[in-house]
Length: 344
Image (cartoon, rainbow, N blue to C red):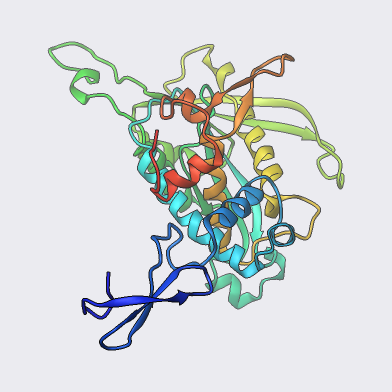
């Protein structure tokens, strides 16, 4: 396409990125014939971008990725935010109409810019994007699917927002088929079991988001020697309590062990969450983008191990939930998120 609208052009060398340049014979205007770039206005090559993102999701830090790829750390951060926002859109688009059986909820602590104790009085009153931050996640016990997440303060408002978001992704039964009708004393059909810790905001949030269509229970774990620095605490007991629609004997199914194991996976593969390091997020948007990248990669590329000592791998969480048909490579993930190739 001729940029100036005239019909005559000739080749005029190449630009610094190797793209063909042209010159109009009538007005002298010059332009480059650049191919469509899946990274928008970024001039980073897609191959370099894939390598950088793959390194980040495999647990490398920003500066480590800079040393390996040769890309500047500012470019890597911009690439992370750009791709992470598309990953968030991809999750919102694909995680719909789910049929899950047992959701476990938890919040993982981290911080942005600086720790809560370092905030000034004014920052504590006005800044929501600095200090302590919690990654709210949930995982399905059977499929290991991570359908949604939010990042923010540990508040009742965020609990309600998160539970409503998760509920909007599930398939609810027809009220006429599940409620009492035709002179029968019907019952609501619970579509999912929910297990949480003892955070006081969960019962109201579960009731608001799921109403009568869920089984809900809480588990409170009791520890000993919890104050010893750098030493794992010893769990000495648990208190399980059925909050809604839990029948006698079903209390033993209440657990948050799988989502707590997911917390370990998150800290392993996200360098900014590693404990006892100098890595942290300077901006909230960077943390949100990094976790969105991890969430998509975890659902479509990561294979968990089967129970026992066999070491055999299961299908990915997306495969177990019937969303994907095979284990995705990172190249497939990159193309699907940016809509540059076929999706499964």
